[in-house]
Amino acid sequence: MSEIEKVFSKLRNLRQYKDKSDEELKIIAKEQVERQDILGKLNFCLTDEEKEFATCLLERYLEEATIESFSDKDILRQLIDTEILIERIKKQINKDYNTANPYISDKLLETLQDLNKQVIEFKTLLGFINKDKEEGNLAEHLDILKKKAIQYYQENAGCNIVRCPYCQEHFMLLMNVKDLEAKKQKWFKRTLLYNKSLFDMYHKKELTLEKMADIFGVSNFYIEYIYETVYLPEIESEKNVSENK
Image 1 (spheres, rainbow, N blue to C red):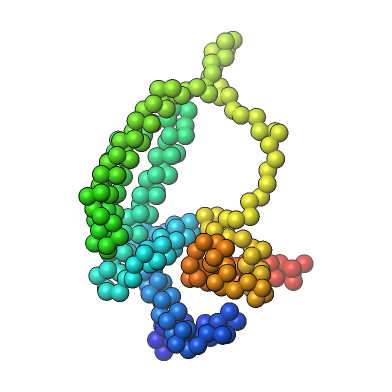
Image 2 (cartoon, rainbow, N blue to C red):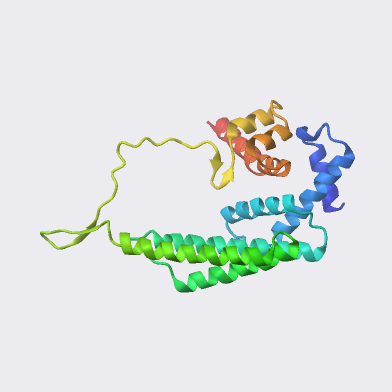
């Protein structure tokens, strides 16, 4: 049995697909297998957060264009891998920037610029963008980023570091948040767009797949993916916890 046939059989047993024809389910199964094939061959997708990020990128790109050929799929994998590396570098830059003495490494900026150029090349090959226009926007964006970093350092470097007039030791002035009330946000699970109450309604057939996609502003595939990989395991875990009490 092929992988598409296995996925088709699995989908046929799910309630949300009971009204789909075999032809429709075969198309959905083929699309899911192709997506998983791309995600499964990524080189730099290691953490759960990166897997979620890669899934969102893949979904976004597949909405923009139809990727059919083997070479295009390989380019798309390289594109997503490169964007994962870019996100890692951005996180490191933000980490370095949010210190008592913020700075941005020239080496990291050079690497970021090189990777962004690779992204432009990949997107151009896939027909997503106009290369000349995008390169101009990238150079302008990096120049603005550098100027902002220098200005922030000049105006704010060490502004929360204070020297004690008695012992001459340094200490930090931190914001007092005692009057702030913490509220649990209901629209994200880690970096995933997610709302359990709405998925409960979807699970109970109170909302259709199309309506869920419209509410979240995403594709049907995204809703299906989150339903199967996040929501179902979550309610199964809650069920086990309840039974063990």
